[in-house]
Amino acid sequence: MAGKTRVEEYGKRKKKLPVRIVLTILMVILILSLAVLALSPFIAEPVKAESGAMSPSIAITDLVGVNHFAYLLLPPGRGDIILFRTARGESGDLSGNQSASMRRIVGLPGETVQIMDGTVYINGYPLEENYRSGEMTYGGTAASALTLNSDEYFVLADNRSNNFDSRDSTLGPVQGSEIIGKVWVRLQPFEHFGLIGAS
Image 1: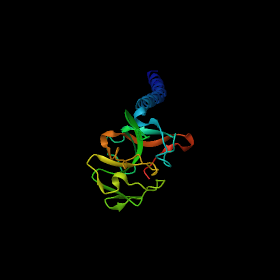
Image 2: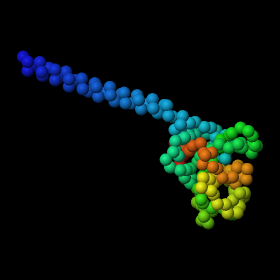
Image 3: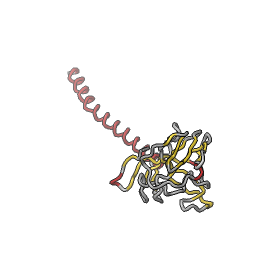
Image 4: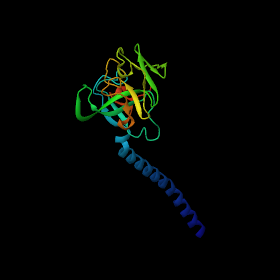
């Protein structure tokens, strides 16, 4: 009789075990989901493109996600599209308000950047750029060789007809401290949803 009771108790425990595992898995999923929701504004803060400066990579009115944590461990890299804060807006007007712009990093700290005959040269070598559009007739600050400081990034619009980038002397190279985050995913339009890579 005692043996039968032990067998019955063992059978009951065995039935309860899967329930515990399922509950534990559900709890872990719930905690992870809450963590993602809490961090989502920093991992993919939605930002709308206000100009066609990054066309064709990012079209005007596209909604993109900006990762604020992207550069905590690794520094910004060539080809990254960044969101940075400046005291000058897309229209070119100086204002007391800080506005944010999206541009692509082409020159890294310590490198020498020069723009000749519509081509970007890094340390004397032409940069291959599959993402650009528009004619680049304006070399601006990089018409002559420009060597970047240890915390400076040379950024350009993908649409090179737009001159509001590091070529413009009122903007110049972007400081590391001015970078808000990395533009890494397109959120809208939904049919174009996906990662935005460094081409």
